[in-house]
Image 1 (spheres, rainbow, N blue to C red):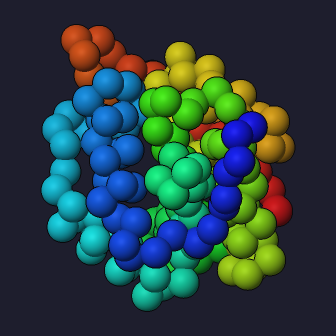
Image 2 (image 1 turned 30 degrees about the horizontal axis):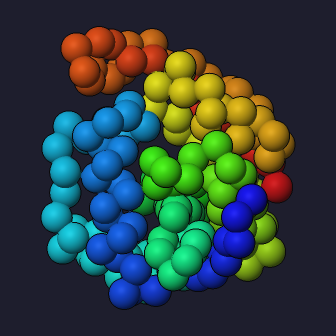
Length: 167
């Protein structure tokens, strides 16, 4: 893997984080969004995560954000407080180089060691996304559910895979 620095995301990273997300929205089925979102929404997301103490990481190559990961609250009800949901997005030019796995490992470590969570879920937007399924499986996640035809994007119905790692 090219010289990659993994660090906590900073507020100044938001435009690059959002650009990576928006590229994925436009060109992949990783997100069920159908349109790009403004940076203002990502700033609000960032501020909410920071205030709640949820980890956000970036992978930096040559001074540019090449990918990001975050741990989010799974559901707002208090009984879910020990369950997190991960997000990982890697810039199109850097996919397939192990960056996603490194970013995933960082948020899982924080879920266990900092937030003392019991489990982390991955909600993979397309059952045909073998890269994301493979990264999660290699990190110890197990497939626990297949939700059939819950999304519609690019003219086709999408099945969603849920994976879980007990901590």
